[in-house]
Image (tube, rainbow, N blue to C red; front, side, top):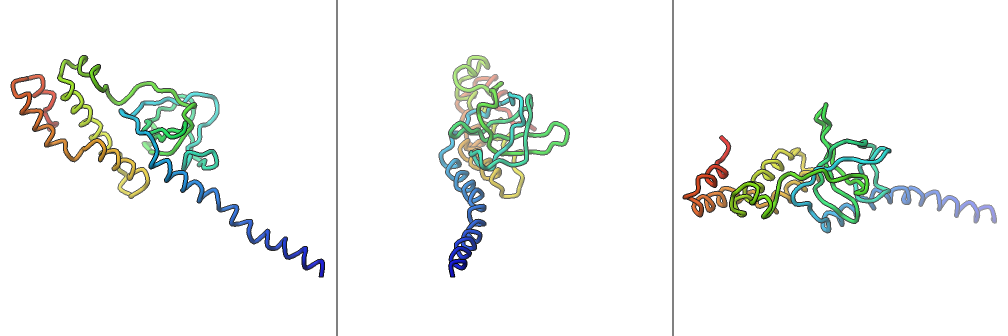
Length: 198
């Protein structure tokens, strides 16, 4: 009878063990959902470079337990879209194959080397255009960039791209362009800046 009492707890523990093993996946989904609602979007998108000596693995969610097999190495270029608790949501495009990988990485393993455009008064001063025109041109460029980022598979990446395009108000570009053309109708430089690509 004593043997049965010892065996039963062991069998119970073995039956529960698979539930413990499955927990990290479920935990990663919960962390990913939390990060998606709390992340701080980078405006403009940041050009990043990997630093350090070891492989930098992508993570399904911003947590060390959520690592994937995909990695980048020192010197690789990334696009940074958002930050959450020291983690960056990034995208990597392989220079030879064109394969695109997205995920979370530790922020201390990258350095910012630029951005996808100038913003604010500095940009306006450098362009010689009114600040609202410069902001519109940069917004239009970012909308064009993100429109090319869709994979068409309803993935988390596609949802992130769609959310970014909504925040940029990409669907209002035509109306905003028309308003700026009317406002600055006597400025040739503004007309040129607002010209649509053929």
